[in-house]
Length: 274
Image 1 (cartoon, rainbow, N blue to C red):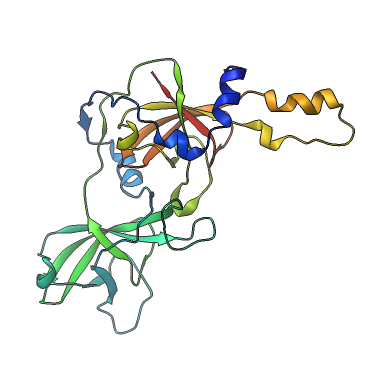
Image 2 (tube, one colour):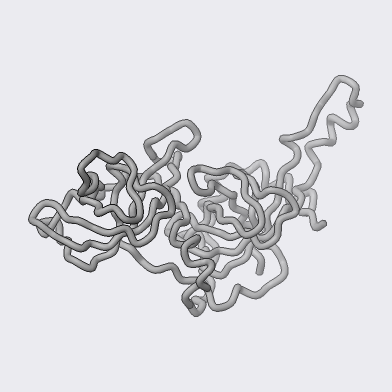
């Protein structure tokens, strides 16, 4: 199992997350993008993201064309949207349906405290009036709820080939953030976020090694010697797995777990493979 050299690990771990985040590595060369395989398409399109801003979207889910009020909608429902031709809606347009979820005890995003954004599915506009529109559900990642907001749909794409390299870059380490619905632990094949986006040089197809700081997990019981206690801070980071960037945004990205020796957990460190 690979470990980070001791002195390097100690120096990195005393840095604040914001200081690490501020470093801007060179942007890698663009890679060819292709459509994902069929088995991966919905997972990527349904993947969560993070935001530090309240969405300004005016297009919201009002309900369905039903004889009763439904609080959760899905395939087979005709969804009613707040916003019609006056909002630029036209038949045939497709939109993601999304909502923010409670993250670390908070429901509203703010600078320094991102909130997880859940994708409930995507819809297609079928009818338009001046102030409202109707849509059909093309895919449901989860139940669509009243007041969920709409964002333009874009089909997921993946890198034709992952980036080459075999050595982790320790000088610009980032962190694992959250998965869908603020999930904090994932395993092989699952998706989760990292705090590296295009502003920090991240690109689709990049690979990262994942490391864990075990010093915060140590047990300093009364039976341990002073030598043991004084040296536990020197324990290096330990490799946990490997991840691949599958979607990238300005300040954060979505990654898929390629190798997992243990659960990949929010707060784990990541080092780009070059």
